[in-house]
Length: 173
Image (tube, rainbow, N blue to C red; front, top):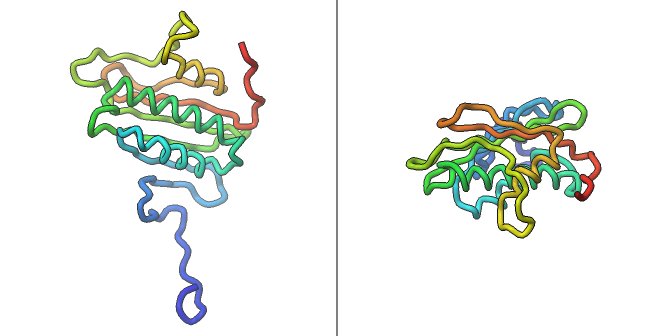
């Protein structure tokens, strides 16, 4: 409450909150807008990214978990394989609710690292169950209805996934 018992004005969903790097074009209650945020390259931001996604999906923790896991994997890949992982790199996340309770999640990187060959996201064939790494896109594949990427080799790419938070957990293979 403000002074004299008058409530303080509420911020609309389009107003920027202090310390919030997201730019939300979502209107309250419609569920049709796109929520967008840009994060840096430091791994300590992983918790902030998960928190941003959790708030954006507006679901109980057990329903939000697949979205958080896919977001973590896509961001980790951007940090590891692109200029987004350099000292001043960035990743842009977009979150949107689609019909039938599906969540569209997109991660855009900063393009290839200078001096390294540019590549495209692809599933690697399983070779060794004990190897470290190389399973991120396999997790994305299992937790998503579909996933893919937009862009061209040598420029920033957007990797996206459509996730049904209400789908049963995938069966073990």
